Image (cartoon, rainbow, N blue to C red; front, top):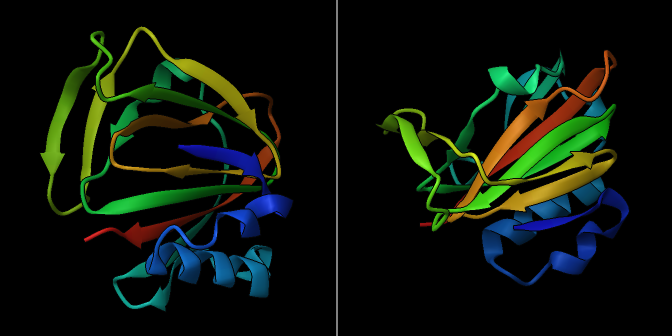
Length: 151
């Protein structure tokens, strides 16, 4: 997983073609102006989901990972508590098996690292079990999640 301030996203170009497509989109578009919901960037290879919400209490959140897409989770405005653990974490337990339609497996974990995303991003790979939408305060969160195909 890569976590950094949004202003530094261009440093991560060169990892893969689809990641470069996502980064170029971020650099050349106003993500706050995107309509809520899904916007295609490069068909099914790269697309963005735009959302606005009040984050949830930690006990209402869950860990997840994806098999076919990376997540570029970008908090544009507001603050969100974000959790991370590696797929090798022995406390990891599957709470919902892999859903092929949504490309997600859900987990619980008792040993994880938590940090606040604020005008920053997390680039989450397959092995990165992550928890999003954790509540920091009552402020609205403006977020874009770019889904990046890896196969």
